[in-house]
Length: 525
Image (tube, rainbow, N blue to C red; front, side, top):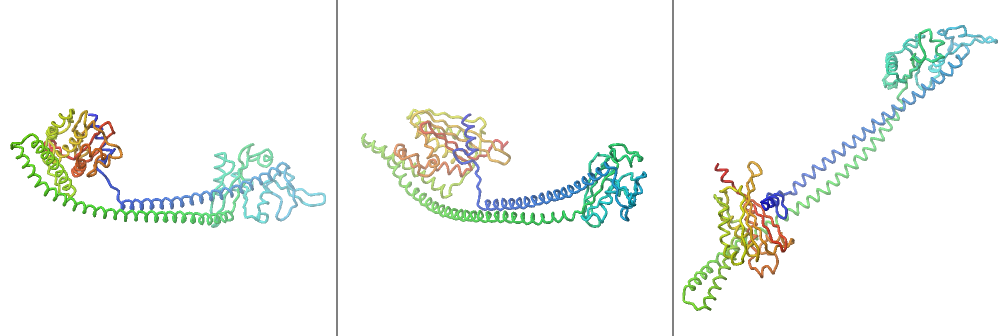
């Protein structure tokens, strides 16, 4: 059973021989594969370049927004610092002018004072100072600042819709600041709110509103134009588009050039393949002509040879002395050997010429094996060889196969094993390869193992070539044409099977052959 499993492994995997059912890759398939690969690569490269561009564009947009946000935070922190300084000094006094009138929202007698020289001064608290600093006359950067609160003392400090939402979000989420991008008057701006917490100095004016220390009492709202930042962004976009376009076209150009080179090589291989196929067809035609010649000549030579054998057999029946009988026996044996050689040449020529036709019939493979082994009983007995037969119990009693060709395969394989084995044993096994799936063929596995001299590894692929044996000394010692395995190989190919050889010099040879058959028991059942 171990030999059956090894045979299945060899024939299904193609180890040390051809796989049972071969597949071939053609040049047109290679060209189509190359086209598909390069189209995929070009599509991948294009997607990669576009993705890289979008990633960098998005990153730069975030960076520009972050830059504007940093400007807003710096400006707000500056305002907070000035307000803290102002509040820590109880406010500052400036001359009363049309642009700086007395603040009516301040309480207390000191909101307006007159110097000894008669100059009227107005007290400027932190909120008043910030309002003055962010007036259109003082602010030349386009940055708009607004002091706002949900509960303002001054009505002008009431929040707009965005500021109200920002104050509520910041208070609810305990945020230090809040920002968003908006379109105002058709132009993009960054809206920013810095929250203001109630401090000790703030209670002078805001205690009456009910604020306690640490509460959010309002915020500094800033509106920053994004136009200068978008100018930087557009400049970066131009550079990014240009850079990615260059790299994209360079990559596509390299792929197109590589595709062109590989397609040219594929075209050259296709031309070589076509040339090789044409040469193979020419060689096949030449072999067919040669085969026809050999078949004709073998037939013509065999006819007079049969006459010679017949006359020698008649001569044996006449009165001959011992010396004459020895000569006749030798001549008859030589004629029979020549007949075997001619039959091998004729069979090989027919196979080469494609004139061998398979005829499937109902065959008992075990009976055929026993019949073939019986042919060699005399030679086995003369050489003192043991012969063992093994049958896989899974083999159907009847299979559909060409009995003549099956018998010829067994005759050649067993004949080779007996001829090349001087001592030891010959083991012949029949195994069964069930169909691997619905509609797939079954296989009859033939394993012939001997304890002969073995075959060198370098010769494993050559022994199935016509007129080839392991070496010259083998031909001189054992004789033969070297057509036996060549005939087996061609018969196995014709029968849709496979052949493997496992051999080790000095340890013997095992032949694995599988032919397609029909399971007649299953079909009839």
